[in-house]
Amino acid sequence: MKRLPAPWRYAAMCLALAVAYAIVPVNAGADPGVLVLRWAVTAAMLATIAVFAYWEAERQLRDPDAPLGGLLVAILGGVLVFALADYGVAVHRPDEFAGLATRIDALYFALSTLLTVGFGDVHAQGQIARALLTVQMAFNFTVIAASASLMARKLTARARQRGARHSSR
Image 1 (cartoon, rainbow, N blue to C red):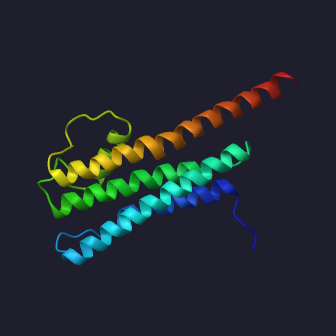
Image 2 (image 1 turned 90 degrees about the horizontal axis):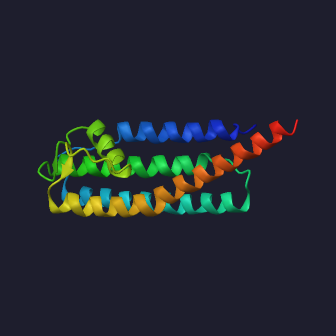
């Protein structure tokens, strides 16, 4: 069976991440054992995303023509995992966040944190939310910003190469 072209594979991965974000159950009545398991799974997912981003960055440095989709998947994965974690905290402890009641609120908050725009309408007010947000900001700075920076540099270099090829014709 023939593999899908890389752009389609990466698009499918991004779609799968978005669907998972939308359907993963988060309910307020979970017992403490389930909550511990969820936090362990969240930590494992973040570690997996960080390793995947590292591998993709290494691949980009080894092969200048490697597809950039893996970096995009890592960025989206990091944003969605933190949005889901923020939402989980808000569901289980509503006093931890101000203005965060839905998955859309959580995604909005994760993106506004990543992009450092922080309008103030959604914010951490409890210690658990602030601890989570501290980890989120560190992850954003190290993994996501590095991936986005590498992606931007590669896109710029590829655009210059295409421009040079077209101008030499």
